[in-house]
Amino acid sequence: MWTSVLIVLMLIIQVILLCLFMLIMYLLVRGIFGVPFVRSNKVFSKAMMELAGVKPGEVVVDFGSGDGAIIIEAAKDFGAKGIGFEYLRALVLYAKACAMFAGVSKHVQFRRENFLSGATLPKADVISSYLFPEVNAKLEPLLIRDYPSGTRVVSRTFLFPTLPLKASKVVGKETVYLYQIP
Ligand SMILES: C[S@@+](CC[C@H](N)C(=O)[O-])C[C@H]1O[C@@H](n2cnc3c(N)ncnc32)[C@H](O)[C@@H]1O
Image 1: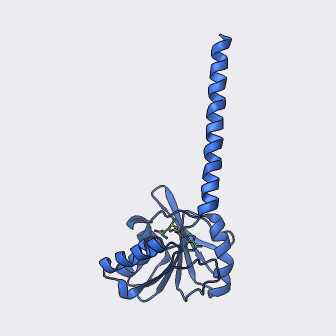
Image 2: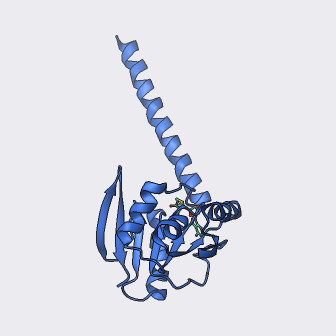
Image 3: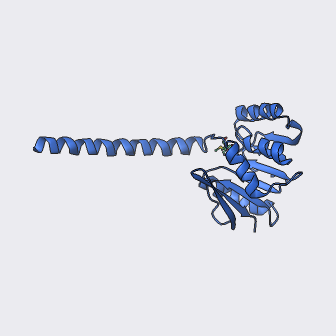
């Protein structure tokens, strides 16, 4: 009887230790490598552009543009111009190739830059982000500094700390948020 209780207790302790180990590894990887690349598929990129009310000729800037999914969607289906900031060279090259295949190369730019390291932020009507909350928190003061009141900011899943929220939309199991620069 006591032996089986002891075995169950040891199993529980092992599971807790394993969970703790996985949590520490996750936090380490996240701390070292920053925001991982996860692309917004068509459902998300379209929902974000719709929520932001992107119109033909407007400029959309995606901070952390990955393979360019959002910028390419903005140019292809909404007639916008797009600029993506991405610090991983391979993703920038891939995004440029995807833009070429999508026939929107003339309307988009991808800059291999860390937008948190003193990059000059281009003019924009709509800003888009799919970044962790702590990165949004670092980006937010730059947006408030450089963009005029009323500029729309659309974010997938993760919140900005103080920007006024104007609307949100549930997409699948996630939510996309629309803010405005105050
Ligand atoms: C979650 S992915 C989103 C990609 C794209 N926006 C989308 O929704 O499909 C975040 C991207 O931001 C990039 N990133 C994170 N922090 C960055 C920074 N400070 N400067 C430039 N790129 C960054 C990462 O390399 C990654 O590709």
